[in-house]
Length: 604
Image (cartoon, rainbow, N blue to C red; front, side, top):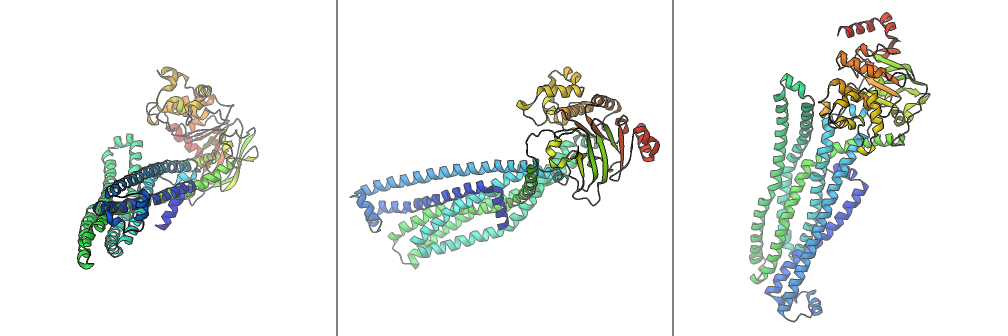
């Protein structure tokens, strides 16, 4: 538990720790006011029933003299005024404290969610290779909220009510030490026993709930993204059953938490009533007190009990909440530690938010480049050497797993090679990777389109006031999308649907080309960009790209060779190496594997 508290302090940060320290100081002041409120009730009862008895207290005589109180009516009036003022001040302070606590805690939730999402967005690409998107989604949307509402908020409730509890204990010990000690021993033992009985199961359920939250997100994401396959294969019930299992298990854990949170109330009320009767019996029969002396003491204990019961209940309930939700801390802490470290290193190298493009006038050169994935035990790319002259069109071909995509990901600056260098006009691109990436346009096999307008999908990620209409128009013309836009009633303001479902495959691919060309890049990279298209659509897309020839350096990854037949040079890759190179016709003559690949392409 101590280790997680340290993690919580890290998540809160230095400014958060200062805010919470001030909040704790305010809670301590509130507890003093609460103690004064509890003590004031029996004093007022004494003023009503036996005003002369007040003068027996050393502090009372100077106050009576200062206020010039001569009659019991005067004492009653001043006592009532003091009581009202005390409770107004106490409750006004408590209201302000609750407002400040609520504001700080939910601002912290926004800040923590922003901090984690920002850490993910600024992480290096390899971070995402071994992570499940459902887990990342759970951490940002669920776990950050649970850390605040399920850990920090209950922790603050424990501090707030714990201070009040301590002050009431001090007050009762000062008034009746023997009886108070006996009462606290009984109540404390019962509360401790209850927490011990429920703690282990709360921890186990909290651990289970963490896993099921990830599974539920995963199933929903898989179900929505693969809905076409699911319907065709008739797998709807399978997905629903998997979701239902995790949902039911999550409901079981939450049901237990709610039950444990509410059980202390009836339990402690019963103990409190029995305790009050026991105190009266002890004072009458064991301590031989006079019946008339019971009233102020019983009033004090009654008021203290009424105030302590919700406090104890809150403390026990908050403790159960923390034990259940504490596991939300670990994934957020671990990802922030890892992501912020790599993000800091990345930011140090990337000095400009919107960098000037890297100078590129002659050639891109791979020099003995090798790369192995973090969890891999074989080299995905080995001792690769190649040169790409500016303005050329080259193709990377070969069977699946040959290393084509890895090579392109290195060129994109997503993966940094463990061995070798990638130079542009003699300069290492990883010396300032963001400046190099400002030169690049990337067209993947599957274009990610958001459920938004065509304009916003072309200028992807930019707010409306930063979209350059001139650049959008140039990108449309280069991608040969003008005819499509003219046919649409809303033109560029047409909403494409989730993942572009309202468009054909060729139209989606052309929007991807327009997006890649929006910043007028010098280098255009296509990663299997036409493999999912039919032959006619593929020819149309290739025709659009042919018009860009000469203005830009174009690099094409292809499994189907129809898209690379006109390349200046092809690199044939096998087992992470460049096995051969040449024009299409040259490789067709001298490379048997390439010949087989070409035959398969023309057959399909």
